[in-house]
Image (cartoon, rainbow, N blue to C red; front, side, top):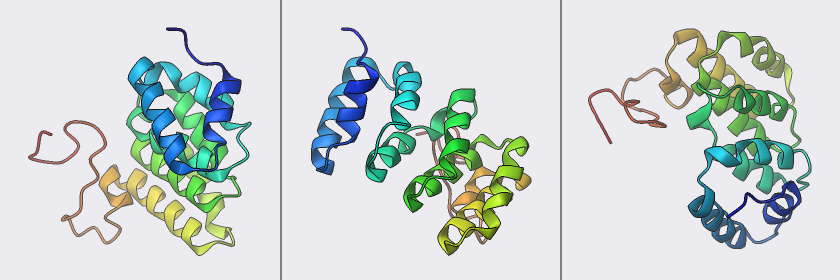
Amino acid sequence: MSLPTVDELVALYSQVKGGDVGQAEHRLFQQHGLEPLIPLLASAYLLIRRGSGRARILFWLPRYARVRQDVVSLALSALSDRSYIVREYACSILAYSLRPDVIPQLTSLQVHPDPKTRAAAAAAIDAISSKNHHYFVDRKHSGSTFWSVNRGDVPGRSF
């Protein structure tokens, strides 16, 4: 089966009912997997008007943040999104990437009017600076909270 068009993805992620999006997304990923869709999702992202649709796309991408430049580029562009949750997911992708070259863009969010966005950016900077993606969710560095994105992410556990 051929990959969907960008227009089809825009229509899918622009639906109002989250359940409908989830079902369509499930069928899409079952048919094609996620990674082959990433370039199309990145193109569709720019055309999706609903923040919830843009957020759903970013939600699935952290696992590729260390291996795909297009995922990091999409996250960088999403830092300026008008939706808080989209900015949060963008920060999470960049935190998981552990790429120090994205710190300047994250630093620019330290003056954002939304305190949750400032906190997410600070957590991403901390995770990258510490070379520990877990600090994005373990903001107090307790060592008791882990963020498992890919196999081997959680010390001592293989999921």
